[in-house]
Length: 139
Image 1 (cartoon, helix red, strand yellow):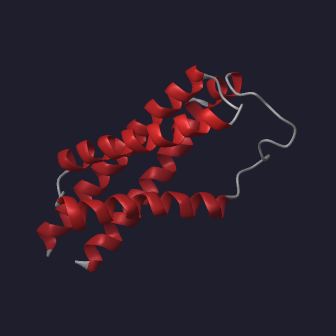
Image 2 (tube, rainbow, N blue to C red; image 1 turned 90 degrees about the horizontal axis):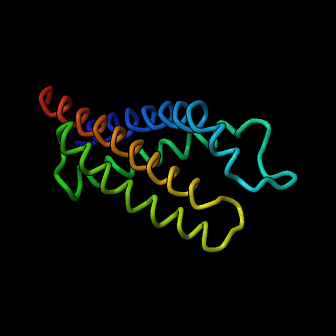
Image 3 (cartoon, rainbow, N blue to C red; image 1 turned 180 degrees about the vertical axis):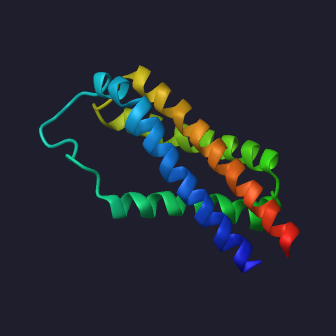
């Protein structure tokens, strides 16, 4: 049980890292830059990589914990659905809270970010669900 959780959370964290790089670092960067109110010193030249890795691993282990401990999810489809649902609520909580207090993004950017978050969580959840299924068959 511990090996399943560790492997699936790590796998999910790695998937989450590369999806974030692809979606935010490549696909959406021009759009989000155009829809962000820029301030001096707002963004760093380069992200602090170790902090980003910790964030992605926390996401992987967060989903793996919920799937394994509470939801009983151990399939690709179940992980996809669970990830989409959890991602939706996290995106709505975070993005609309951010927009309510900060003058940083416009509504279009918030909605696109929320959609991107849902997609990333869905795919990450699918990977974790698949990882839990594969680990179950081996054990």
